[in-house]
Length: 202
Image (cartoon, rainbow, N blue to C red; front, side, top):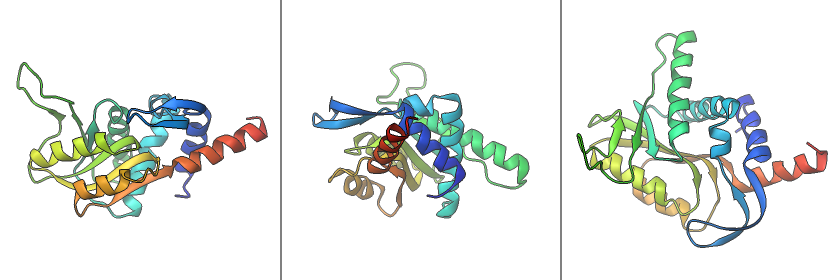
């Protein structure tokens, strides 16, 4: 996705979120690299870039939605930054749609309203599910299912980095049904940029 926002986001991800080594993943598998997107999405500039990059990706694919949401914790900063980016866009482009935010708890609250979804929740609304890294797709699928159970329509699924594991994308696509699954970057793209920065002494 050749945009200024995405190019800058890729450079930052490669510098602060990508590590080579020996790591155990949440799935139990091992890997020679690890991507901690939260060090970028919670970064002041990285948050801004992630919000605008996701918004541009949705625009490019003509995805129309009322809100953006995902499973806590990885989706939290992405949701906030995309919602804020849509508000900034509306200031310079009156009439541009706002994307409100919602967060999906891993379990329903045991007190108060007992809700699992916090923030925007309107049956029949079109929503975009976001996540930071997609490996097996488990956290993404949990958010998709929660949104569907609340009566919302999943218009698209977006992740910042797709690890391109064999079962990840197919599982997410099956859960999302007809909704497209989009990613800003693949893990190989982030790795390549990381190696380029090392070679350049960045």
